[in-house]
Image (cartoon, rainbow, N blue to C red; front, side, top):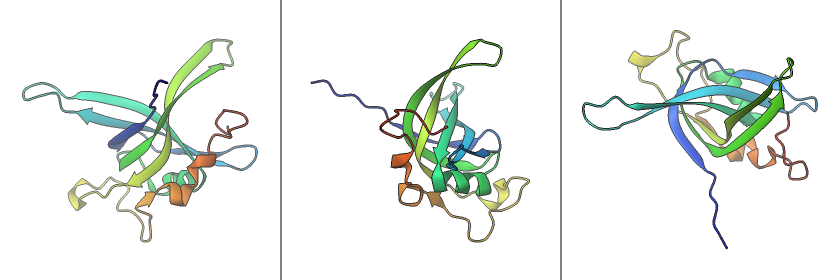
Length: 146
């Protein structure tokens, strides 16, 4: 028996404001870009990763409401390959992080974004206890709900 692991954990910053939308059945979906650096050694440039992430349900609503470009965030989940045909008939593909945990990380006052500080009462994380991400991919379809 072989073992397989598909886990992702990243601490980084959003590369753009999240896009919040809803499926035809009303499931909230937030899409956002995240960037992180990997230290490669003294005198060497950091290795930078840019990725696309998606989350669902209450986590999606919290991400859409409270995060913005530059927000520091911890994202944990798994990788999912997607394939589709664009409107012009070209086959496309992408690998995305399906976020099962999204934790908002605080910023120091000197690094606040132009959007200002987080609003009072903003959640510090949207973990599976809040977001119920286990239902993000229905087992019967094997696809994300969008």
